[in-house]
Amino acid sequence: MSKKIILSGIQPTGHLHLGRYLGAIQNWVKLQEDYECVYSIVNYHAMTMPYNPAKLRENVWDLCYNLLACGIKPENLSIQSLIPEHTELGWILGCMCSYGELSRMVQFKDKSEQVKVNDKDMFISSGLFTYPVLQAADILLYKADFVPVGKDQDQHLELTRNIATRFNKVVGKEYFVLPETIYTNLPKVMSTADPSKKMSASAGDKHNLNLFAPEDQIRKQIKSAVTDSGDRTDKMAPGVENLFAILAACGDLKIHEELLLSYHQQTMQYSALKDAVADAVIELIKPIQLEKERIVQDKKAIKEQIKQSSASIRLRAQQTLQEVKELCGLI
Ligand code: TRP
Image 1 (tube, protein in one colour):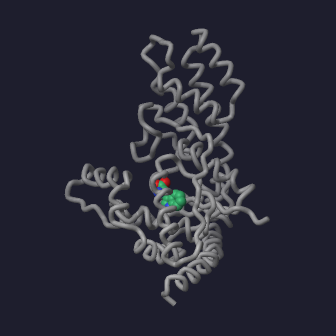
Image 2: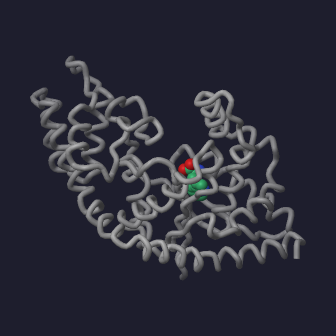
Image 3: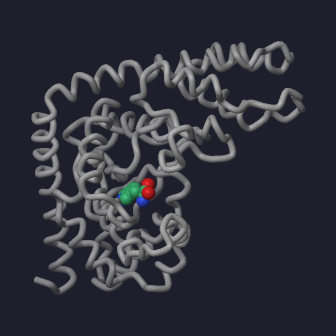
């Protein structure tokens, strides 16, 4: 039996931090063993918010090196703008998606507010509004069975299934499979500086642990992590919970268990927990950092390789688009 297909997309914005790695990329790497995977660096999506062209280009390639360093296989990696079928299918699907559906997207509401907060003279692009249609195209173009994404993308996945269903109805054929979200038990990593916030690059440097930061910076950031105000109540404070979650997610289960026990016995020092977390994080990211050092020694070759892989992934996209155009009465 042929392998099931996985597709996921990642925006080339901000740097790769521990939350993104533990919450998504590590899982992407594992999925490559059992599925046929297409991972797309979605640079068209990154233009939907105010952006800087030179920075976008730089971010795309840097993300490329970073993903490869994490263990994404080059043949599974593509750049969205090198495969014009994404936008072409996006147009077709846009005609099968209602204005009302797009108006209900929570991410659109959040992000359009963000645009105004950052700069009140900035406009909200129509690309931001139709963003979920392009995402549906990314997924349906490869007839993906599964899409590994976080909970925040549920609404976009639901919309993708609605668009696929409508398409099938219009053309009178069960052409698109309805993609499902892959749910895995991934940790939600919070900011160490403010554990009420999700770890993210956009919130600022102190709110995320950059996977490629030097060791002393990582140690310093973890040392200054917010824990609790001293009075330990029955319920673990969010900052402490987050440190334990990071420790477990980095795979140090034995130390995790020992520290948890002493925490409950009220004998644990927070400095011991922080040291353990820092050690675990460093151990996890060291080989990734070394691999990146190796990769960036020949950027030209890597760029060539990803252009090649995008070209071969494109062949599949072209096949789908040909069929879609025939079904839609366009050719
Ligand atoms: N919207 C996704 C995010 O913000 C990124 C994305 C774009 C995506 N296209 C996709 C995710 C296709 C999964 C599949 O994270």
